[in-house]
Length: 247
Length: 260
Image 1 (spheres, rainbow over the protein chains, first blue to last red):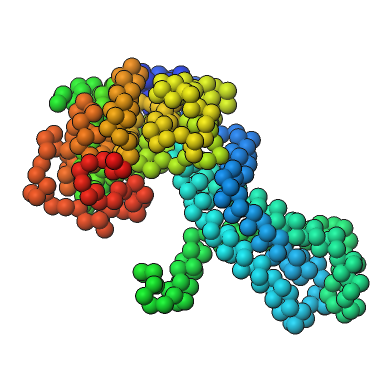
Image 2: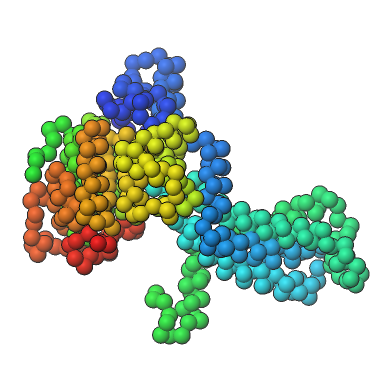
């Protein structure tokens, strides 16, 4: 038996390793991929070995589990998730304006103004999403303990952040979509929002989704281990010497 | 103390980890069907490294691990994971419970990840919760049940795939004497009736006393009898690799179970 799943390697068999255990792959007491069989049988055995060694949970099970773990039942966890949603709702409108406004209207001062508008949302998103880091890590660890693959565990664990940050950002962007006309009436014709009136429905839709995606990406970055290093570095710089965290 | 089984379900020989042998040095362990063995050692003795090598989470630098007469150590990492999912049960020192899932859903997760259908997985999870005498808490969530029930649920989850070998890292930590006694009695009985070999990794002599046989792990070597700690060089914490740190226990202040 070698580490390779294909070809003539026989699978771990023996009296206790059989199809009566977990899964439905065809690995019986005789093992998988026995030698001395025809090419079609060998191919079938290799396929069985592949199915045996790489069990794939159904995609809909992953989706259901992601959704189940994404919606928090605990009151504190729910409040923390809503904070992420509100932060994303704050950060999405300026992003949407940048995405949909004609490039000619976006001067440096306009961009700085929009950045200043987004700054409270960015700060809130960074703070609320980084507070979710431990939840995300713990969920991924729990799923790995249950036998999930690393990538699957990571993806399922990000479900809550994606759901709440995405929903919040979409909410914020939709507000802009709905209110841009009355807001535009209040602005001067040189304001970047005026250029948005000419944008088509598809452009609005794409820009809305893009702004939500950017907000979700920001939330995921803020809850990542990379951002934790930035947090720690900032704490080291900003904290008084007596309370600085150790290197 | 009973002798090792002649026909072991799990047979590890000459395990070395890492390559310089600073954590595990020529460690051997054989466990028979239905046997309950404790690996007793102080923090840093190499328990977590041994567990990781035996269950395939880490590949040893040298040595062999045979499962039911098959060379488990020759499998690739991804295949070891699939094999572990089907034929090994793991109880982690700090099992993560999901507040959103009931104990039945929690216990059935390994089966679902092994591509089993929901109905069958739920049925088997319920059966194992019944065997561990916590069926009445099956539809409760982790926040609604005491530690003892959670510990048993973790054991039920580890046993739900009817494993060849159960690796339990401090399975009785945080339990009272009475609870620990009851839980270990159920575990021994279940292991014997299902022919599952149980390896308990612990730093607590009381927990080890619940097992049929004890192997002492001191300074990265196994001994059948207790060895005075003073004659064996201690393993430096820095030698324990990052992948083991998750399961590593903090140094105990007393030999008693933590949380008592």
